[in-house]
Image (cartoon, rainbow, N blue to C red):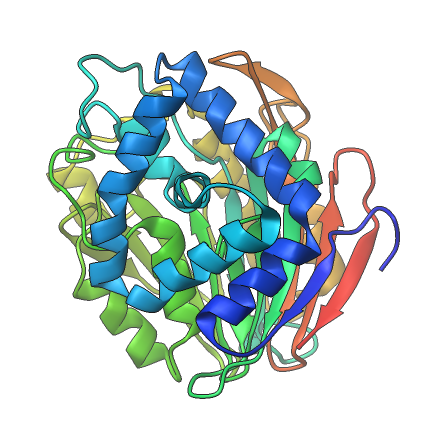
Length: 368
C-alpha cells in the first residue's frame, strides 16, 4: 500500500476481539468518522444527547438482527476509545441522518444519500472471461480520509475483503465463496415510515457472510428495511442480480447481454409503476449516468476490459454532476465527491481501489 491508498486491516477471532483490533488499528480514522456524523446530525438540529438516545434506540434492532454485530461494535468502540453510540451511528448513518423524523424528530429536511454508479460484467461479455464487479462511491468528501479495507478471517463463514467507512462493518466487497456486493442510493415514498429489521450497512455485511448467491438473495427478500437501497450482487462463477429494495418489497433485474449497470433511480418497470421516485428530484443526473455507462459497455460486450470499465467510471460528461463526481457543495454545508472507485475480480480474489479518483486515478491492489 502507498500513502494514497486506504489502510488494510486484518481481522480474526471472536466478534469482540475483531472489533477491538479494528478500533485499535485506525483510531484516528474512526475519530474522523465520529466527527463527520456528529456534525452531520448537529447541522440537522440533532444535538449529541439526542443522537445518543436515537443510537441506543437502534441497539435492540441490531441485537435482534445479529447479536454478534453489536458485540463487534462494542469492541470497535473500546479499541478506538469512543462511545458505543458513536459506532452505532456510523453503522446506521443513513437511517439516522435521513430518518430521524420517524425516530423522534418533529421536522426534517431529507436529501439523497450516496450517489454511486455500479457495474457488473459477466464472463461472456468480458475480455478475460471473468466476472468484474465495479463501483463509484459518491458521498462526503471527508470519507477520503475515513475509508478502510477489512480482510476478515471467519471460522464458520467465508472470509471477506470489504471496503468500509472507519467504524462500519461493511460497505462493498466480496467473499471467498465468490459472492460480491455493491450498493446504490434509492428513495421512494415508503421510506422511513415503519421500523426496519436490517440496517443497510449490517445487511451488506450479512450478505458477505453467505456461502452462496442464493443465501445472499434470501437475506434480502426475508428482511424489511427502514429505507430504500439498491443492491448489486454478483458471483465469480458468472451470475448477477440487481435488487431494487423498497422498505417492504424487492424488485429484481438481471444483466442484459452480460452487462448490468445501476445508478440512483428506479429502473424496474414494476417498481416505476408501484413507487414514486423521490430521489430523482435531486439526483436527476442519475438518468444519463446509467445510460452512458451502459452504452459504452454494451458497445464493447464480448471484449470488455478492466480499462474499459475504468474509462466508463471516469466519464466526466456533465461535470461535476457526472459519473466521476468532482467535489461540489450539497445541503447541510457538505461537499459531495466520488470518494473511491472500486474494481473487483472475485475469481482472482483481487480488489483495486482508487482513492479520490477525481484527483488521482492510481489504483491500490488488495487481495483476499
